[in-house]
Image (cartoon, one colour):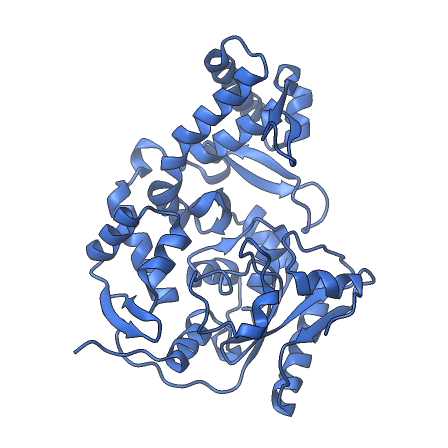
Length: 403
């Protein structure tokens, strides 16, 4: 008989697996890679997300600890993977994601770049791209990490202008070397390192992966089979986000339907019944989850927990839709006992502001105040702007009236 996993059990699993209970937090020199592995990977489209997602799951939250893991210990690294999104993960998981999700992006991105170069008047775009690629690699090998601007200054030929999304309202002209760097990133040849400015900046420097990590992400010795990698990635994801539907996994990975179904079969996922329909658990992870006590978490925009599923009804009440933008990107959220019950953001003066979709008990209110104090201490005097704000978080920041 198919086991039924109810909403309350799913919320209890989330609390423990995602290290959102105080007793499940981690600490020490390996805290950041431990958090990244616990969530498979951390979203990094917004640089603030990495630091605050890790901080929410650390006993002693510290921006310096996250920066040390990223840029000194290099125990986590940035890389494009699922859904063309920028992630931060441990090197072994990055290699897994690269084989399972990123490698297939290289061909389409190469063709897109060639098309843009052709539209920009380059007579032999393939030859130009090969030369530009070689120049970037040679420059980084001799200089070490450089920003996109510094690479453009070092190799002036790469500053050729091309038009992105021609004919669209959001069309923009950029230097061609930005496309070259993006393509090299998808290939696993370069990685993004410490940015110019503070930890909230996205102006990353680029380095050769082989120099930054000691070996290429996609070298001959570390080029796992795509199918085996998809199986392992699906298994890891189910251990963290299961039970979940086939639709959830397909959305999270960006795979096609056939690849998703095959990965679930290959990892021997166990079928269960969810309130919304069929779902899956990782094999060996079928034991019932014990209830958890009251908890509150403040998660940043694009946090892996909030963005972990496409079908979100079980943790997103109808009145909480304003926590996401129209593209489905989550702004900063307030979680109570496994549900999104509010939104938060930082005001221009640095104050933390909240808007709740429902009343909280006195006990939950005290926990929320503790979480707000933790975030305030972690952020300190730093001011940040959410890259993908929800309607409610944008209104909070601007001071607009909310009903």
